[in-house]
Amino acid sequence: MPVEAAAKGHENEIVMDLSAYDNLEEMKVQLEKSLGLVGDFGHKDEICLDIGTKRLTEKQLRELEKVVSLFGLSLKELRYSQKRGQGHVPHQVPLDSHELLQGGDTVMVCRNLRSGQKFYTRGNIVILGDINPGAEVIAGGNILVMGALRGMAHAGALGDEQSVIAAFRLNPTQLRIADHITRAPDGEMFKVDNPEMARIRAGKVVIEKMKF
Amino acid sequence: MSGRVLVVTSGKGGVGKTTTSANLGTALAMLDKKVVLVDTDIGLRNLDVVMGLENRIVFDIVDVVNEHCRLKQALIKDKRFESLCLLPAAQTKDKTAVSPHQMRNLTNDLRQEFDYILVDCPAGIEQGFKNAIAGADAAIVVATPEVSSVRDADRIIGLLEAAGLKETQLIINRIRPKMVKKGDMMDISDILDILSIELLGVVPEDESIVISTNRGEPAVMGNNSPAGEAYRRVARRIIGEKVPMYTLDDSSNIMTRFIKRLKLAR
Image 1 (cartoon, rainbow over the protein chains, first blue to last red):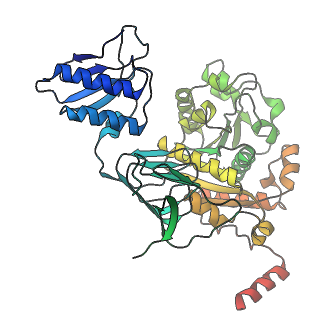
Image 2: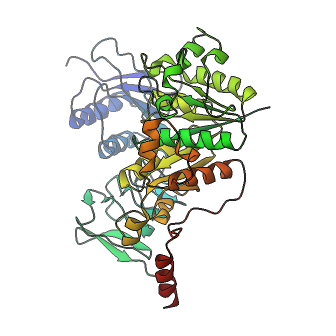
Image 3: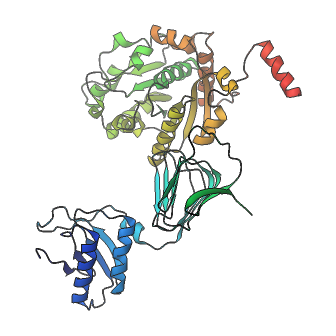
């Protein structure tokens, strides 16, 4: 094995270098192996993973988190060291890791999201305002828009098919729930004048009137 | 004395930023305000042409920020109005020739001399845009009733908010009342619904704009241009007067009024 996954203890955290591994399976195996080898982490309970040039999806990230949690640790952040096999200078990345790794609470956004603006959260999201075309909202949980949804919304982005998207005026360019992507039919213009909700029923995204 | 810096912007090109700047500047000067027009479209300058002042340019904005000349030397006095000036853009440089910091200093200098500083912003959201909004107190977003223009305006408003420019008002340009009535063009309310900002004015499509632009005489100076009239109203709104909004039913045609009344009665 060229490079062993190395667990280095910095001041208060454990940094594990997984940058030499190409796919998730290898990473997981190695992570388990090295964490098992170390066994005792003292009073440290947070770990940083250096995954080199690889990029992870949310799902893959969760799998790594799962492995880490088996050892009583929580994933603090991901690092991407630039050059593989050369010195490994891990450098902090702007992957909003903190935002990303915080629990699934509900976030409230009290403004309009305009074209080019993006909002991301792992939990639920409530928006007091409109989501305009060209704007994106991505949530691990549900999305509730107390205004017009004209842009793109992705609920259950971590794979939860139970997630729903509800809006005062549901008129999106595209809707995504978990792995499903839908859009309005071509050429048809709907005049929406009541609150609606999108959810998955029988493997399809359906839009229904809100029942109170 | 401290003047107000207004940036005229839109995101999309060709919606009438320069025309709006020239006309509002002239209209404000006609209201006895001291006005300076600043063209920040370096490399693609137009405002001087629209104002008919092209042949008087000696120094430009790049010369001023690089201190190759004094500000006063670069300011071109308008040929019609004593209180109107133009600071032209450079044509042989590009947008990187000026920095936002330099723009802020420049607008602060201009504030001492003028009541209104109108900054004509280039199309796009890159360096030129960032320069133009750097020293601004408020923004006037110009949009035409087209989906693409409204989309870009939305993006621009988002960027203005992010830059801390809270005061943003909208001018809807080149609207065609007849097409709106037939449902072939976006309505004012549709646009306001999406952009959700304050409406500063509505300017109708007007062929005389083409003529006045080619002649280098802003349309507000003539008396029989509907667009010119609309810009005069906007200017009065800018100085704080309460002026009724241009409405699509503003037609002086007795027949259309009559038909409208019939419709209302039903």
